[in-house]
Amino acid sequence: MHLTAPVLLSAVLAGIGAYGVLARRNAVLVLIGVELLLSSANVLLVAMSTQERPYVLSETTSVAMYGGQVMTIFIITLAAAEIVVALAIVLAMFRVIGHIDVTAAPEGEIEPATDEPVAAAASAGDPGSPAQGVSGP
Image (cartoon, rainbow, N blue to C red; front, top):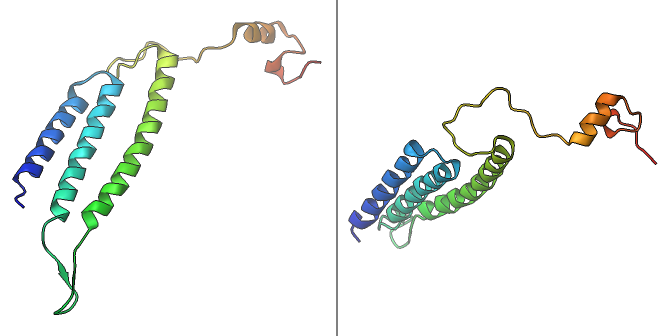
């Protein structure tokens, strides 16, 4: 099998992924670009591992090398974990800031949203407020 088609596909995926990481401002589109880069690496690993280069144990037996497929499984697993953590961070960023533009500079100090009645009760000195750690009836 010639490697022209898988290498070309991998190069196209890597190019699109690099463009997505470098040129996009939306955090979700940047994550999609990272996933395309990982997919291009997976295509290349599987294509290279399917080449007929057997590891010769003796004169009568040989074993094919499946390192590319094994590495691809690990990359897919790590990519799934990475996307879960990254999307959780993006969701938290959207809740706090209100947008997911990765190039925007933060305006002032970012404070998480607080519950207004709890903050008002804590400032009034109410002994039963949850802010002071005393539980009510």
